[in-house]
Length: 540
Ligand code: GAP
Image (cartoon, rainbow, N blue to C red):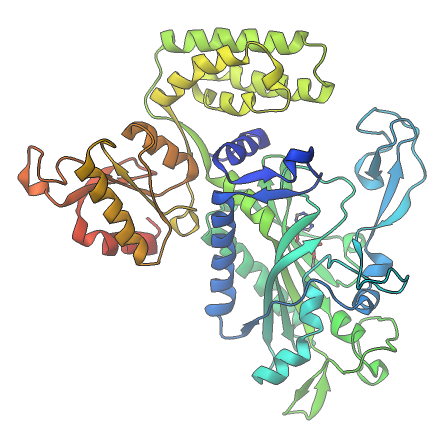
């Protein structure tokens, strides 16, 4: 089961510290999000998995980390200054601004059809360079990391003696002044990309393009996305970016719909050719603007043919934030631990009905918030037995806190959820923000607590994984809290561990509880590190 609605994810992410709206204390900044304590772990794990697979485990790849600020000429010759634009319209009635190709002639805010003619809007953020605000002292925040790779092509080639085919990989921030940021972290103004520029001989590009599409699908499967949620889409000629000869998008079934997660483009010799001097002598296949500023020829000297070659480029370009969203969505499940009896569901059903009536009657709620609350409330009410945990998400949606009966509904729901349900993130272990939680059965028993803390310290000192200690609730509640953030293993220290239980043979052992199956087994403390390492490697 994956997330059914974006609200489920937004609510969990905020509640448990994965992702927060940016600049919230000042009313927010549209199109920005901040990663919290668990979000940064998840994001770092995703980036590390990508780097490991694409740089460490390949023999034909180098990595770089280029500056975000680049000479503004980069953006002239890359074509972004002229072509990185969206057609945009303003609503004459409510003054909102929209992308013309996304609204079919009607303002989504006020439904007016009084719109301006579409005008081009450059998506790059302009920024001043240096202390003097002179009109020439500016550059842009990079809208893609790729250009940092192209302008370093010769540096990497000369410092590593690479031969074609080889690639350069980079992970870094990119910025786009999106007209309509939306769908949580799906479309934002500041995001991260994981990009590869793979340089091949002209003529070998189509074969490599095909191969990279397969590789990238397999990699997304290896981090836990399921094949039925991934769809390759071959862009039509009129959809191609200015630099591309062909592009295959990998679409993912996000809660808001099937949309792009990664693009794999055949950029031909456009970029290296565009940034080169002496273009006329290079036999370029792509049409590029004449470059009068470049100081170098971005070519590879082929020792066999004794000729300078401008490589073609295959570019797999994935969004880190969209990757995080896909992982969260795929991993999310609301599960019944045991069936809730009818007499426990009935009061929740009534409280939910009262809440929805109250939302419907409320005249102060903005129309959009009211509509969203009613839609999500009705979705839950339709199959209350299955969807009851989603009420936590419903109650954290905009406007819910202003409904008087919200508190009563929460009071009815929380004890039933605690007893009969769990929300769980079924992350692959290597992506889980926390790998192991060490829990004392009793937090007021000094020996249990000190044993648990020393196990945590010892496991943590191995350096291989993030381990936490938690004693902030009863054991059942602690398991649920770890399930909700996707921790694959919980270790419980109890009286048996101390040799004070019924079975003396269990002394110096702990309970290891598995997130997905909820199965429990006893493991000797002395074997824990090896046990966990093996489980982690096998992905269990
Ligand atoms: N260098 C090629 C390039 O930038 P793109 O299709 O414009 O191509 C690549 O972007 C990836 O970056 C997308 O597939 C998406 O995952 C991510 N991306 C693009 N714009 C984004 C935005 N506004 N918010 C979040 N991710 C974005």
